[in-house]
Length: 304
Image 1 (cartoon, rainbow, N blue to C red):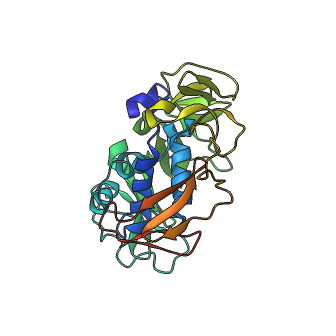
Image 2 (image 1 turned 90 degrees about the vertical axis):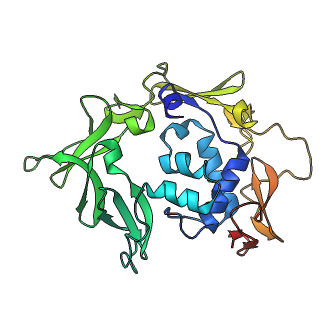
Image 3 (image 1 turned 180 degrees about the horizontal axis):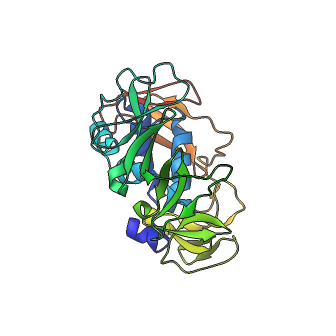
């Protein structure tokens, strides 16, 4: 997947795979990821639309490597922890309004909230060290100094593998290479781009047979819609944007819906929601030992 990203190629997941991931994100109590919503439908739409678009090349590695590949809560948690001990945030971040950072013995940067790990960044994977500054745990690659009164702007590293800047006396960076990308200056700003993809200008999207083609940061990104049983054409939710992956055209059937108006709800052990302009149902008993749909309309999700 990372090699494909470097060539500007996105292979979107099937909606069924995103359903499975959202069921675990919202229903498992040990997955170290902060969940912004308990609306199953909103979760599926958010990740599916992002992962089926050009932005997928910059999406979370934890979601791509762990969420879409896991078949159980335990497997998802172990992958997302990146080898960290799940108890390493015990007693930290209690009552805090935002996560509190700490470094574990393996050099990972942990985000702690209410005594649980809600985020892990594996600093050694990017050749970096973990450091805590002002309550934030960050991956750094060495010391740095800034002259008084001067502002340091982020820049590409000499080898084009990362975006770096000087913060609190440490070189803080984001690895483009970890995403399968390389760093280039785009309109004066360092940006992670698919270095092997064709150069382009503008921002209009188009269809090239079964692929959606978009120009992102001066590079051509091709989303292979047909790999997820999608077509390239009119966006099903917007009904106007050309050149995006979408479900097949509307047929006038009763199961068509508007995601901005449809409310996610429980129907027995099913979660009923709207995605891609279609009403879908996900049975909570499908995986992971979950056996019920809980939550009021608009917050419905699977649980144990």
